[in-house]
Length: 245
Image (tube, rainbow, N blue to C red; front, side):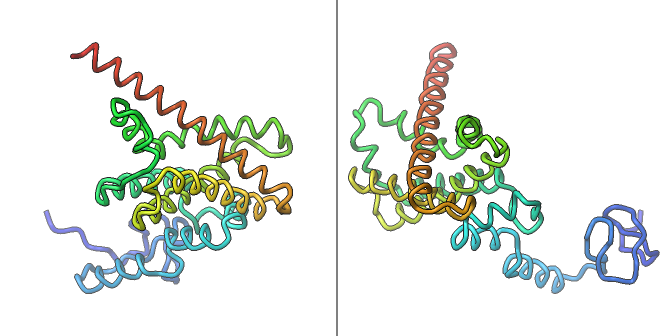
């Protein structure tokens, strides 16, 4: 069987639609296929990673500089430009987990836990970013009771993007050794709540009088919900271990 090669028959090899005169398929957006060359593959790969409009870089940039406005754009329908919020959260949670392992982070909150419970607490901290995928739904539903004009899905996206960005904030703290004491750990929680306030201010157009308490309350709700989910996870894993051991 001969090797497959892009054919010049005017058919998109990605979706099967007829190609026009442009460089991209009008149906699926894929670039017109060209013969494979190593140099072209390297150039295209570098361009996708380093491109100013790459979805990952764009999402990171906008969540860092204009988080509320970015989430508003996503909710309004500007989806292709940004990474899916759940994918963003899972990715940043993975980055945080790897950072905790590679940096061997000394976390003040862990040192405050009784020695016999530290292993469970560390396990919970490692999983808490993933648990946020589900925990944020409960918090969004609670917020919907107050913000009745907003949908649960809209509030969920707001919480998930914000929490994903906070995962990267935690990576920075661990890299700087800024979470090694208990007071520094709690101070980072306050900063995290203020970040949510900033997100709310940009998204809803609120002033600080309304955004700050709302952001702190939302973050506190996320923390309490995720801690509850984490301890349930630890309890279930312990039960499974006892039953199978």
